[in-house]
Image 1: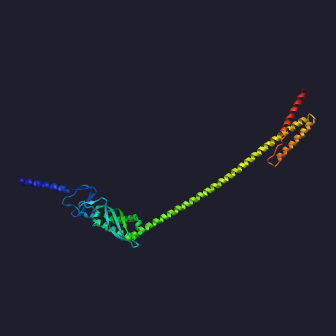
Image 2: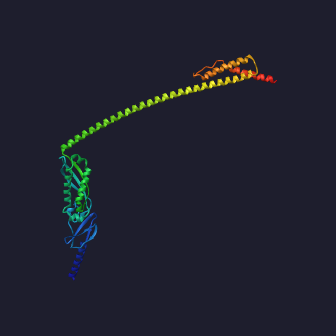
Image 3: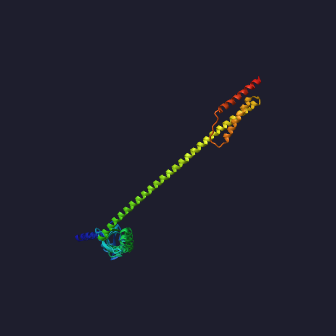
Length: 336
């Protein structure tokens, strides 16, 4: 009885042990390689996975990971950072420099990273150092210092192509620092100071040049405006003088016209009187009016813009008016 109980307990423990051995849990961002009887069987994904106890085993993949906090049988699928040791490179113009680099990579295919390369971490590090030396060897110092972005892109492209068959993706490469020799660094510092001083002088000279140009333009514009103002003043003065003369001529023409109309009206009246009387006054009056008419015609046809009317012109107009009154009185007497 006791022997049967012990056997049953042993079988139960064995079943529990086998059951637990058949279940494998993989954390997020990790993977595991399963080999069955020494041959690759499958890759365990994050979560619960089932295997055949005693036949399936997890492969040790310590050399694949940069991180040391993972179990030896887990592959880190997160983006990893590899610090490439500072190394000396020689530029195209034989300048020795120290270059410090970071490589960001990620394992995309765990199977290839385990079976296609012995030690991916070591391989990436060595390949990076070799590629850096080759790239800097094709450039002179000035290009190396000023074309860091293009160097990063070229490094990433070369490394990514080489590691693709290992199931590894190179995300990016960053050149942290490029350190030239101390003596060259001092010379570069002096050159930088000289360049800054040169640029400052050029900037000041350019500013002074622009100031002189602006001053000259200001003087030019001032002279143009003054000339235009003087020209407009002359034009306005001439226009005013012209308008004055036109108005004076129009006034003189109007005055002459009035004289002619008055003389003509007087002559008509005198003719009317002569037709009705033979008095000597009529003869004298008509001769006077003719004389005044000749004066008016002479003034109207002359070239002088100014003339003076006789002082007795008002008396003449009065005489003409008197003649009209006499004629009117004579007519009234005859009617009576």
